[in-house]
Image (cartoon, rainbow, N blue to C red):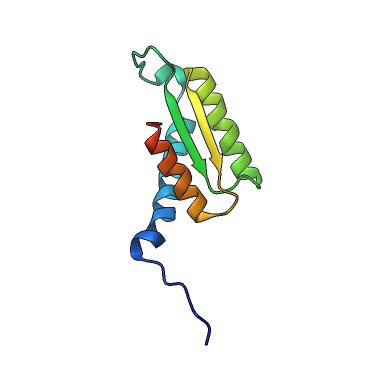
Length: 103
């Protein structure tokens, strides 16, 4: 009899939550113009994180390019990760960003 891994509800929902957050942020950032964004007083560049599940298709590549363009216009330090299709890696990437106080 084959054994099946049974993930907890939290384990099943974490990748979904991360993906939804990434999509929501991408839409906000992509629709905003650098001049329209609020200016934040800071001595160091703002660190902004972008954890994606993979970057192997045209939509993902365009999304990544858009993030990089907005970050450059705003003077943000962009931290990007690519989980290569692994949900657990993407969750780990996000947890690492949180520990590093990346927005």
